[in-house]
Image 1 (cartoon, rainbow, N blue to C red):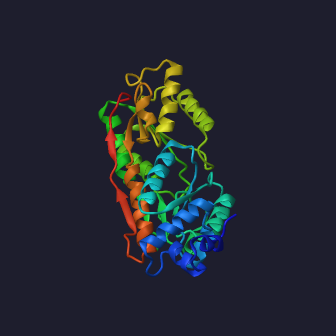
Image 2 (image 1 turned 30 degrees about the vertical axis):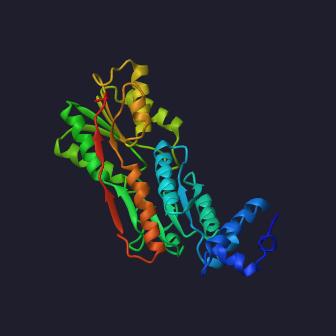
Image 3 (image 1 turned 90 degrees about the horizontal axis):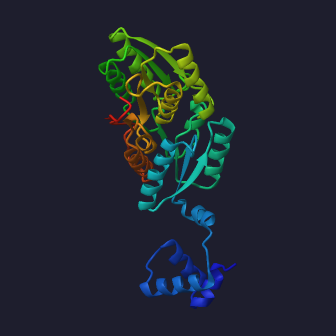
Amino acid sequence: MSTIKDIAEKVGVSVTSISRVLNNRGYISGKLKKRVQEAMDELNYQPNQVARSLILKKSNIIGLIIPDVSHPFFGEVTNHIEYYADKNGYKILLCNSQLNMVKEKEYINMLKASQVDGIIMGSHTMDIKEYTSIKLPMVTLDRQIADTIPYISSDNYKGGELATNLLINKGCKKIAHISGNLHLNLLAKLRHDAFKQVITNNDMEHIVLQTDLNGFDYDEYDQLVTKMFLENPDIDGVFASSDIIAAQVLKECHRLGKSVPRDVKIVGYDGIQLGKLITPAITTIKQPTKEIGKMAVRLIMGQIQGEAVSQENILPIELIERETT
């Protein structure tokens, strides 16, 4: 494996000069830069990024911890975060926590050891004090951890209002809301709060079901939806807390011979690409995944550069009405 010393001998300059070129310090002529790059290519030299980050106190790497990389919503957010990080000269170190506290702690320790410049947290299983003790620039997605840590969220309450009002205005008489787990300290619970408020204001018959605490289990969704219709066959409207769950409701309606939207109207949440590809296409509350990714990178970079950044960042949602309503 080639070293800086090999590059210096090849170019005919000192190791110090090569180090200045690699770290872009001091005046360096264009001619020298070109000769060093040619020597690096010829010798297949790969800089030691960890050692370099220790010297420069900067790695140009951002850690990203998400709960489930296979979930379409998190996949889309991750894609946008990586895009905007790359545009700003940063790379992403992706960690898949699967909502496991032990894994999340291990990943945080790994990211700190890897000298990342900041962490974007999409998974939140630990106590608040454990996050505030990390001492790195941080942004959280859909959870307000502490006043000192900026967070990004879509307008969950407004989304819940729009979804519930749409089902009522479409003539639904008994509406079910399938929420995420309400014991988790997530801002997504505001969707449920909005649903309950609108239902109460309109004196509507309704039921609320919540998913399991431990992750995104599609088999669990199947069982939950099957039980819902078995115990409440007169449900004619469903507000699902994700498009994945809405798709499961649609599947069960097909199995039961219920016509959508004639017999049952369905509204999902997230606005993932899958929702418009299935038949009938799912009406949804679209979260601005592109803007979430862009803002997450901007907030991390602002903190890295010592700038003051806004702590509360609520982004607008959009009702996309399709064929299930």
